[in-house]
Amino acid sequence: MRYLFCSLDSPGFLFPALAIARELRRRSHEVAFVTGPTFAHFVQDSGFERIPRGEQDGKSFQIEIFAQPLEMVRQARHVEYALGRFHADVLVGQQLALGPLLAAERQGLPVASLGLASYIFPVTDGPPGPEMLARRAASLHDGLLARFNEAREAIGLRPSSPRYRDTPLIGDLLMVRSVPELEGDVASLPERVRLVGDCLWEPPEAPPDPALEQWLEEARASGLPLFYVQPARDLEFCDFWPLVVEALKDMPSRVVAAIRKPGVEEETFPPHFLVRRHVPQSSILRQAHGIIASGTTTVVLGALTHSVPALLLVAGGEQFSTSERCRRAGAALSLLRRSDDDLTPRSIRAAVEELLATPSLAQNAGRLREALARVDGPARAADLLEELGHQRQRVPRANAS
Image (tube, rainbow, N blue to C red; front, top):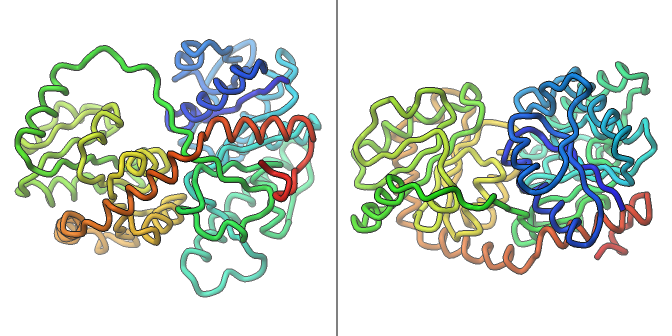
């Protein structure tokens, strides 16, 4: 069978797609990719073809503008160009990459989407009710659907106005990167939704980084708590980093931060901080006492698979649903950012101290680590994709493996 993976141009989205693609290849299926050019070398290093956007290649599947109708149309055109070179049986997209859904409909192909660490849309039809999480899920879904319909009209498809449980935004199969112990009431999810574990994957380790290894060794020897900080990719959307610096500048601790901001490594920070644009996440999490992050999928799942509790500073998007799942499971604390007054150095410092003083957070994170470890995510996802390819239609949950 032939699978065309359609990935946003970001390691956090590309790497789990590569994990599943490698499992499909192990089962003797053919796999190719469409994604932007920035991280294409990871596709090529894994032995897969990355098909360009056209005769003149260019940017595509950009995470920063995933919700713009023009970007959805660009993605659809990219996929359709790729199908002219690679005649796929199944498209495998991602929940925030909506262009493949358009291409699949136009080409009459089954389409699966690789989801996030939680189901982010409403689970029941009708008004969302009083619960804040349900209202936010409805708002997120309705906003994306409106833009998706703009893209549909732009390429000659009729707008869609379904009930939430019949939403077109999840394709024929949505593979959520979670387990029942984290997601909660699985029976309430739409039948097209499956849980497939974390599906985390990192490329082979780069050459040793002596400076980082020495810093981590000194951190271990100090006996002080180590925190890993990772704000959202879009710093303008949730730039809590200066607040964290202020909160922890005098706290006996060690802090490693990955800040995707040009020139950040040349800035001056307290001596117990190590700040880089990128650090290998797993190498830090092996000895971290906690993470301070925005609640995005990769860092949350990375923390849980290392039994590390989290302080999640939440501002929007998937962060609300994922942080709430972690909070309900007893593995995280969360602070919502509804205005500039909600997050302060004082509130962050108090939450960090509460995290250190609450051993049950790490214990519950360990329980989730065990649950995630029981699931071979790429294998489960590959099983579902094979079933979708054979059935070429939605598979009832009762028949799912």
